[in-house]
Length: 205
Image (cartoon, rainbow, N blue to C red; front, side, top):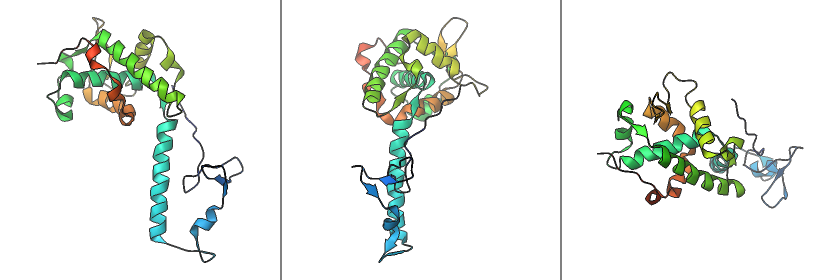
């Protein structure tokens, strides 16, 4: 499946642009972009000015990316699973986690469901505040959501970041790949929304 998010068009300064190509400020006032590049009535080159404009544009692009990002079930399930792996191995840094033998670990089913539910609740609140976009499947029943997420993870890779083995357990072939998909939701502070005390999870020895 291919998901495309079309964001709000913006000009070179990050201001919103309407269908006619006119720029507006945050208060809805029409902006003359050309005036921002003029000195004494003439368009001039000013490296310091352009550098500042570039920073402003960069900040707006990052802001729009966060808001226009569409969260898929695969993103949510991967994020939840890797956060569980981190929680169960508090003595390991990221490099230590990625070096763990994936074939010796399975993700506990009920805690995975609970973490997914907690994260989804936080994401729905963000969606209502227009801070992010959610795919339709994010609103499915949790078991169906998790299965859909796992089925779409790693479709373009030789190893699977998350799937069910022959025993029906949720496992991973590749923690590095799981971490890659986890990172799609890394910068939203979602890990702080997980109430670990409510979960029956033990640390790994």
